[in-house]
Length: 346
Ligand code: HEC
Ligand SMILES: [Cu+2]
Image 1: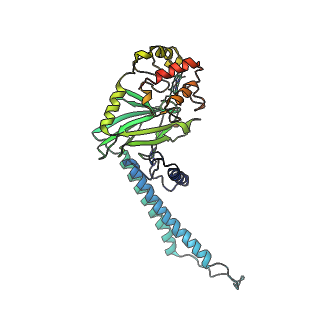
Image 2: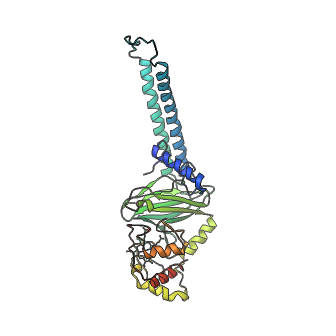
Image 3: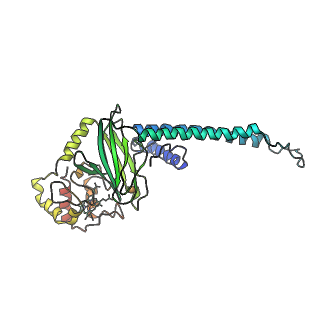
């Protein structure tokens, strides 16, 4: 479901406030703190504008109503010397006032319905530009499979796309699920869209600036839902082409590492993970063909570096309890060899 017009929601306001304070305290970039009021793509911008309009209208109503209440409370308060046995003048029935307070709210509601419907329609009905890139995103408990069907590329948790300064390039996402319902949300690029089993949903994004846009699963999907993070990495179109060409290559087969590769190949990793160009053909977990290209491990739980990779392979249940990769109980030397092999997957 597209959530247009998320403004006026107390919870979100709290989230935005915290996000704002985080940027101030930590000096993190704005992309990292995914502020819906700082959109970087058309759908997000239209929705954010709508949110601001809704907040402005409802804030206007709030000021008028709260102002009248405050005025009444002060102006007509009980004062010393008031005769408590005498009723104030009673006023019954004013057609004019009743018509006004019925018609004005109805008009406001219809304006809000109208602008919201228009934004939803313009996001849904946008026709794909000629230069569109197709990316299939498949939600898994608790990671994202990212497929480029036109390039035979499969990766995980990071969606590389070309950026589009003039709106002439856009990425169309086909959203599917391998298990339960998830929801794709990169707040600075677009609204939320559910990934539903046995169904394909669509959304599109056209990030305007190169950079990393942070997102998360936005539909509770089990214990590690909060650690189902994603990154949209928008690149200069030429850099994107370079990236995709690199991804199309099969896995590096460094002759020096044949012993290490053999250790990996002898373990049951191969029944869950694919490494293109090898006999590791599992489909249950993320494709590892170009693992070292990724910034994180475990859908954002750990930065991708030597220490963390070793810790992950040693026991993924420690950084990500409940995740569907078991601790493989490797010996120290197996661990060293497997990690050395993984680190060659550039
Ligand atoms: C039962 C299936 C299964 C087995 C066996 C398995 N894995 Fe995994 N692996 C997974 C799943 C599922 C994930 C994704 C976990 C998550 O992020 O929630 C994963 C994630 C990973 C990741 C992180 C990938 C990324 O991009 O985040 C690495 C690296 C990895 N596995 C390596 C291995 C190695 C090495 C072995 C063998 C020693 C192995 N796995 C055995 C299922 C498995
Ligand atoms: Cu999810």
